Length: 130
Image (cartoon, rainbow, N blue to C red):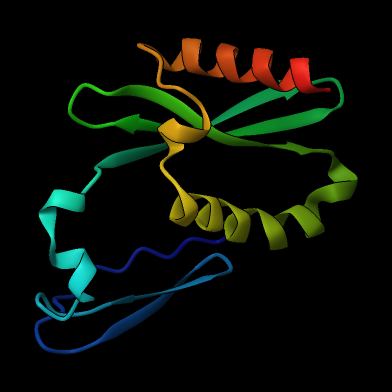
């Protein structure tokens, strides 16, 4: 995945850039949708991708730290083999954002005190469903 980081003052202009397969737009302060202006609905999350290498390929865990002492949660995991790379690259980021917009990562997978515990709990829950 190609990620381009661009540091340009936005001011009153609209700036559009491409991050992998995602198109993002930064706009001047005060032009966000009304629901984004209400801080009572805010949930601050720090995204951390965690990779696990194994004999069958790799696993990408989509992890979040709930800022403010809420612990760590795993939103989802992508299990990737070399033959899956083109399809996973096309679908993974879209699904990641869809899940994040639907509900809080902590409501999908209860928060744990450490990232390692969150991943272990996610694996245990996923293995029980298989």
